[in-house]
Image (cartoon, rainbow, N blue to C red):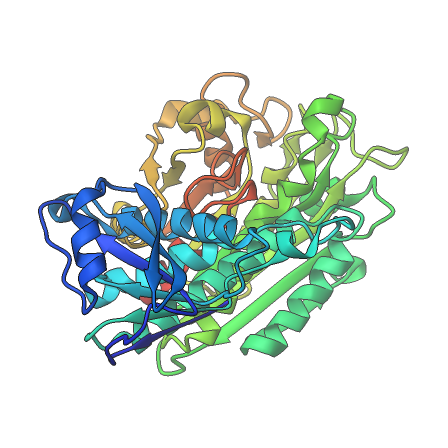
Length: 483
């Protein structure tokens, strides 16, 4: 799909679907009297979409009337959702085999430049569908919108380009998460990351098993032992401001499949465990957006990629393992594996790459889903100022976050009896104690933990989110780097 803008005046309604934006309490003013007249009779309530057929020069033309609601209640996230819903509607219109044109013209989009960018973002993200493995889709069902032209007097080239970068980077993350685990496993995830680095302009190093062991990443390696697919530690580096010593660190959980190990999951719980690397996908996607945008910032991201499989070589409940930080850990539950891989990854990025701030992103606990559903991402942090930056970034992206308390009592819950720490704090406050465990490997570096177990996937297609992977929080991480 190509999206562009034009400052020219549209002269004909023919050969394209015409989209008209409606705002409550405001008259439509276009060069087409028919549209101005009929728009008065349609609903301008937020997210309402009506279609009408007009006759223009003896030809039938489709007009799509899109409600934006009351202007004073609009924000960029609502505009994204409207864009996503519009895209789905346009695709349904194009499924009509009798309709030949795949172009769309947008009129009366009286928004500011940044809001138009959000509208474009919503359209592009709403256009996404993961169906590459279906072999019996009819041609008309695959028909897509070709070109969308937004007619506006505003200069929006930069905003449209930014929207394309953010949407494309989010889609990269979605694709990585949606691929099955026989396609994306540690080696192939590393290969894909190297390709993306070459395409978008960030450096990638990949460490294999011997290097992982040499670095002392015993916790990460313990999780990986049960699988025939050997682990990979992926390091991505982007230096946009070589005069600065500030480096933002991103750490993504990279469990390309999680059986639970000896603490075996049920079959139902395993069905979506290919998505347990959504944290990794989001930091990879963020690096694509950051480097393609040529931000004047320094960002390093790491992914400890492995599978938590079950075999004679798997680590077991009751094991005591070490870590890169030399802290010892009692394994009470082999299905609490993500925090073990993150412990070594976050210690590495702080101590070896010398990042000055760090964010880890992980589908870590079912407790996060119980806590906030798929509406917001719970946050654990050791630095309120850093959290305020994340909150600003999340406001720009529309990806909600909510800070959890991190009282000393929560930290006490993950103290070990036979070792320094234990890898689960029990049933209560599971989202917070998992974050507290990772915090034990951070030291004084400003740190944020994002548990995206609820927000990384969607059970249905809604707004600009498709069923399956959402790509969250790629755009939040981008804005955090940009701030």
